[in-house]
Length: 184
Image (cartoon, rainbow, N blue to C red; front, side, top):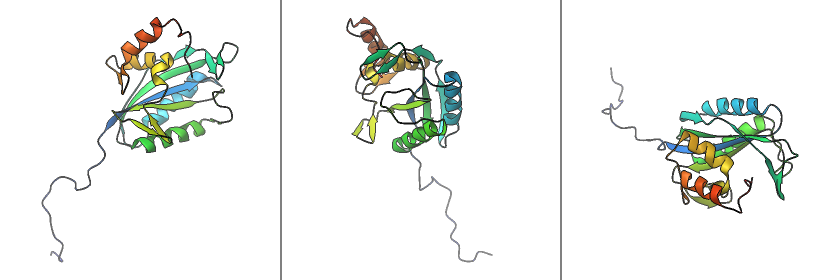
């Protein structure tokens, strides 16, 4: 017996979710077991809520860069890039990236200093934001081979919003006589 409940015909959910976007996340580590740090971070990112797909590049090793330039005496970095298809809002995703860094022992003591784990939101779909709490695409991504090359390895058609094709950016950086090292 129906006690006054209204039955509505099945139809689209009146509360549609956010459209899935591809987020580009750079991972880096130069403290501790770097490979394990990246592996653990990738596993944690795969398990974030509202992540539908995840792929990560092979890591590459790069020289540490300090505020005053490259530091070959500092521990080298392992860097990788992950592509995540997600329905998380970009600001929520960025907050979760910071939480994963903290879970893995990241301490923000020195800008451009050594770190167990660094996770940067490089791009989020076509979004462009210059808000201080959400700068997307990452303001220095177009200058960083340690981001662009791993990204290209998992997406040969990659485009950095506002800057163009990633393969063109890589060619330009490699051909630039003043470009001798990536700036972190």
